Image 1 (cartoon, chains in turn brown, red, blue, yellow):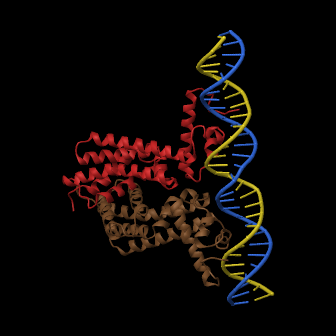
Image 2 (image 1 turned 120 degrees about the vertical axis):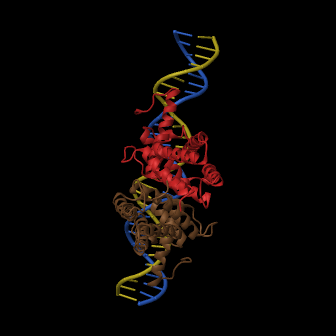
Image 3 (image 1 turned 60 degrees about the vertical axis):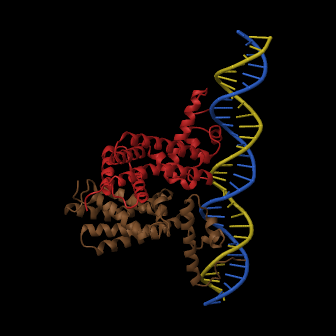
Length: 203
Length: 203
DNA sequence: CCGTATCTATCGAACGATCGATAGGCAGAT
DNA sequence: ATCTGCCTATCGATCGTTCGATAGATACGG
């Protein structure tokens, strides 16, 4: 008596694996890692908990896969955006926009990455933090380039990146797909706000 | 054989209660609500877990007390800061500074308030969110005042507050007492960054 | 000043529930 | 006959909570 999910043969396994991933993301987003039981994840997919171990070696590993996949996609997205623009201002605008769009479109995953760092085992924590630092350096370099060329005025690039990251990552906390403001509008307002903050010129 | 904590008669109880509060804040800050066991909290204070129930009716209530006390103190601090300034720009500067200083000086408590909303029972969640909304309205009103008087240019006050809150609350995530930049310097940079972003004038 | 009752602050032991993880089996497709 | 995908059953550990007991301080009546 197996429920809704799968009949099973080759391809369906991939579907099941993705379903588990999706369910885990949603539940961890809602309740946190320690607040989410594997039984709840399995129930969401229509499986018994032990069946999850056919796809994932442990709960910790499941979280780690979410983090890895999400961060890798985010990094690639922002790198592509930066590469397309010519000057620091254009690069910064593109990077912020890409970051915000990503955090809105994949808000649950993005939020989990930010909120569940604490739940990682030491080795995993170190790996994720290292990747995050590489990611933040993308922005810091754009800021420093712009400052050298006189386009930006930033007293401290690292601090500015902290501010920017927190501000834009926050979109994943409150954004709702059919909210009062369109996503494009949100991205525009945020980008303008930060750029006006760092652009040279004016008092 | 009771350890370091208390000999017991009236006054010491207050000390014990405060110790439990402090230990809970620290552990929940580090490991999250669901990742923190009451046994760990008790162990930190040198008590048996059952003794905690002499001071707190439940784990959930302990979290709720942390939230209430912290939010109440934060609200009072920012309200005082706003009251002292005359014009919208001064009020905004004062409010941001107060918010940042609070989140740096009481970073563990402040972080717990932001990060553990999900761990609250529905009724508690509603209460805390209502208080948070009142708090954010303090900033929104200053922004709207300034916009009406032509000092600020904000396309959407609510969105600007979201950005500001995320940005400044983030200080509690990374701030360290003896870091590279002094707290005053951090507050200045953040305040300038946001104010340049919302001040009228310039392109 | 003495005995007795009450209060304060803590303990150790135990509760049922739930956790992540494992072992072994079984049905169906290849 | 094997492999794939899932099951049932169970493990030991740990969770939050409750309980009765108790040592020591305090208050009170004679």
